[in-house]
Length: 281
Image (cartoon, rainbow, N blue to C red):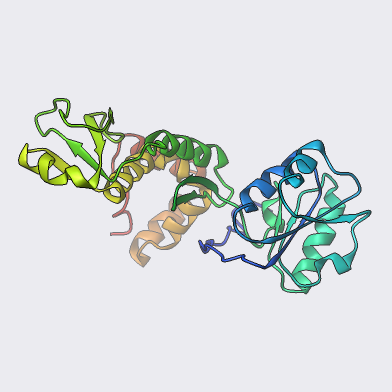
């Protein structure tokens, strides 16, 4: 059976309020420790079940109140859970946890096993109240990580209220955190809201952080669009073609060219920043 027979569903992005809610993590190694760090600060009631607990998990427990379930996994651990994360190294056990969680309609994440997950944990960047989540649906984790790293560089911890830029390309001569505008590499400065009037008087361009982030994300996506164009997406593009064009496609694929070849051609166009948006037109 080919990988095109079961295209991955589109995932629904969601931020969940977990205050006072039971979140069960099964497994207590380094991977589980990473998930616990993500959950800390959410107000969740964190339960951890495992035969043995790593030093990393025990270290986190010193400054927090976790509920431990020591021993082999038991189905009753799932009782009253809102989320479950299976982080064991036992494939059969992870499958059992996923099946039992699904039976109880509890969303489950099985680490590194996309097909068993009811939800996925995206790559994230957090700066104060701002959280940016990046997901490729599990198809391109390297790209998701690359995007996260670029956003981390852009959203420095000294992030100010506004970005000021000299439209002539010079350095902004005003108090603030000097940096390079992330999308195009121009000199810029993060300034406080109180300096907006002065910056405007001097003729500087003022940009709010949301616009900076949106512009930068657009450029990142353009840079990585070729890698994001999956085989399943190409199949969907071809399927959505008008009837008269679809007849031509059916004559060509796969007898003359393969869908993989079409994917590579479209990826090459995207690398040259040639839009394929109007392919069905």
